[in-house]
Length: 225
Ligand SMILES: [Fe+2]
Image 1 (cartoon, rainbow, N blue to C red):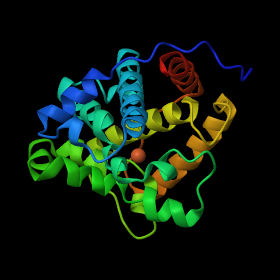
Image 2 (cartoon, rainbow, N blue to C red):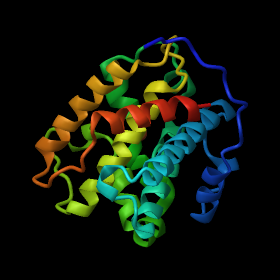
Image 3 (cartoon, rainbow, N blue to C red):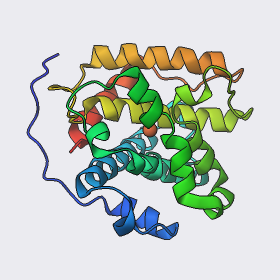
Image 4 (cartoon, rainbow, N blue to C red):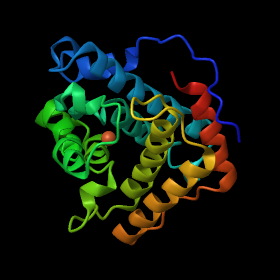
């Protein structure tokens, strides 16, 4: 497929992210990061949320997103999952190069835990599924010796979040690369993630056919801004 960049949408204020933060007692104005970092994070989280809305509408992931209770938790997790990245210095978060593995381990790996620290104990207690999804939304968080919660419903919801997060991240503009990733590249990356997830749980993952993937990928290209 062509990697020609489609016309960009006008940036929009990700109101749902602001709302989700405010509802959970976090003042978006007082996050310890620059406006550039904040925009980068908020727009990504908003995009992931929008892709999950598409997935629910298309009844993907075996219908795991259909019950409103589950969906609201997954959506909340999507809108807040990377908020811990506000702690990452701008020169690292928005570095126009690939990070070293040391930088990745030092600065990027802790962000799911830091997201929960920012959201606080009340959030974890009030939204246990969303909190768990945030905690485990990167497989490196469960490697090599951590395991996932033994809950089939959680595993299904986590799979939906990880797939939408990875696809969206791969097609958004990023300072370290010129082009978004092709569908073949993203599919290969996702296959790798799925293998890790299969190894980390005894529960079956929801189905994601090639058609499902293509639908999400091309929707992600349209949604990104
Ligand atoms: Fe993340």
